[in-house]
Each structure stands twice: as structure tokens, then as C-alpha cells.
Image 1 (cartoon, one colour):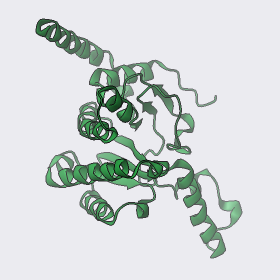
Image 2 (image 1 turned 120 degrees about the horizontal axis):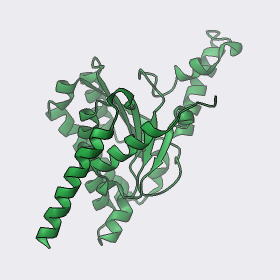
Image 3 (image 1 turned 135 degrees about the vertical axis):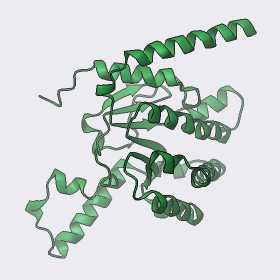
Length: 260
């Protein structure tokens, strides 16, 4: 059995090297969005509690970000917790908040962000999050606000519809104050009021969803208008580097016409 396992690992390493050699460095996606789905199903299949799947998935995010850094993908937006997720079991929500707190504390304690000049931003209705988490987010954002080589966006208490509603409210207030005429409102003006306005490229080139569910689930509804969507049939804790490489290879093989 051990021999079979070692053989499998060896095959995956060779396959991974081959896959990477197939990627066109000049055509890498600049912005990847990812929906981390399947943590609870992964836990259920292993007779674990739902939050144990979330803990495994949270640890796996570090690997994913390292893979993206190696491929020089400049922007990653992670769908971590939606506005709808607050309706889940109280214990599960509590454990998720602990995961985010632990991850942010680890980020503050490491030199990864400084070394790679990664700007971190939490997008969503942050006022709905626990105060200690809000304070940690503010600290990380303050320490990385001058970085502009890589961008990591964490969608927390996020909803695509809520984002559009919040942008519309801001525009309504500007119109009410006489600072903006209704006829001036266009796509560019709206994008200047989205949660992602700080990014050099707001629209993801591609969006990955693990767990084999074929829906966006209220993720980046405005920004994803022309994103390439990839559904991966593995749960998030089992998502591998070769899965990411496969997605990028398939992305590079697609013809993107943007409606033309």
C-alpha cells in the first residue's frame, strides 16, 4: 500500500511539472476569484463536525496563495463568508470567526505580506463581523495599504447584491447632496463605488468553484459579467496544485470574445 502511495505521489509530481510546462506565462490570469465550497461535505464524509471541515479548508488557503504567488497571479479574491452564512448554526459561525481571527493573526506575525508586497483587503459588510475581527482586519489593511505588487481580497460578510445596494446608496447620497447628476452615472462611476474599487483590475479573469456546484452564490455579481467559470469536482480541502494548473491551462485554451 505504501509503495502504491509513493508511486501515486511520484506520478502527480511528474504530471504537475508537465502541466506547468504547458502554461503560457504571457497569458496568465491577472485576477482569480475562488469560491471555497465543500468543506462541510468533506467533513461529513469523514464523520467529522462541519467546523472541522472549515478548519481544514482554512489551513488549505495558505497553500493556494503560495501556488498563485509562484504563478505570478497578481490578484486573488477568496469567497470566505457570505451574508447568507450568518443563518448557519451558531456554533459553526462561531468556529468560522475563530478561523478568520487565527488566519489574520498569523498573517500579522509573518513576513510573507511584506516580502511579496501583498495588499490585503476585506470586502463586505464588515460591521456585521465581531469587533475583535474588525480590529484585526483594520490592522492588516493599515500595514499593507502601500503594497501594490499582489492583492489579496477576502470576501467576509459579503454578498454581490449587497455590494451593488451599498454602491447605489452612496451614489444616491451624492445625487441628493448635489455632487452628482443622475445622467452622469455610468458603469465607470458605479465601479468607483464597489468594494473592489482599490484593485487595478476589478473583474476576475476566471472564477473557480470547488465542490462541483454550478452557481455563483452571490459572488462578485457585477465584476463576474465576463469571467470564465470553472467548476471543480473536488471539495475545497482536497483541491490540489495540479487542479489549479488544469484550470489555468483550460482558461488559456478558451477564446474570450466579450460578446463580440
